[in-house]
Length: 272
Image (tube, rainbow, N blue to C red; front, side, top):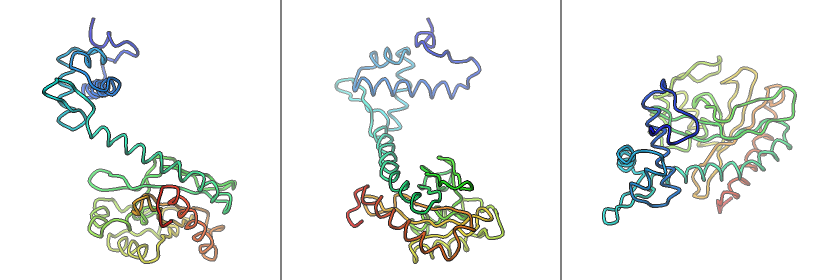
């Protein structure tokens, strides 16, 4: 019986790339080890449905990357610190959306417009803003953003808010590593212009996307501090320019800032 057959479930196609098969097996080894807590090689191999030699190669690779630890005296493998850090990142993301969701719903009820939550994440050699939650407004014409989608750092309120929370040199590197796509005549298309907008965010405490990504759409974005006081996310309200007029910006801003303060309090920020 082959290793694949002994595992049961969906057979792996012969046309699957070797790297994908290796990744699948590596993840199965890590999951088996997480279930066992700690175990010798033979037990991990049996739990993963792999030969001892294959399991050892995968465990050694995972050990070198910090996902697995091995105790020489007992010969036992256990999950490593880096795997814990991955889990902690999931916990942090879940805690953020759990804290934000009710306040975002309240903000939508107050303003009648769509509300988004975004975080900064690595992207290639730089960074990008990524939407992690949205509550849609009730209007027939409303702004929709898919969860997981990215927002341009130079042409979005959330992008500028998140960049403003980073050191100047890091913000510049992130913009230099980003293609500054021209979306509308209002888009900032040079690093210096985008950095100047980031400076204004630091001074004002909020960002305004005034038709920079899409004509006819305006957005107000504010920072959301985490428990440690550092910016954990950016909260934004988006609406057609006909409803979010320049005269309405102060009202939208005040409501968004109040919601961000409440989210920060839910996250454990003591000054919120």
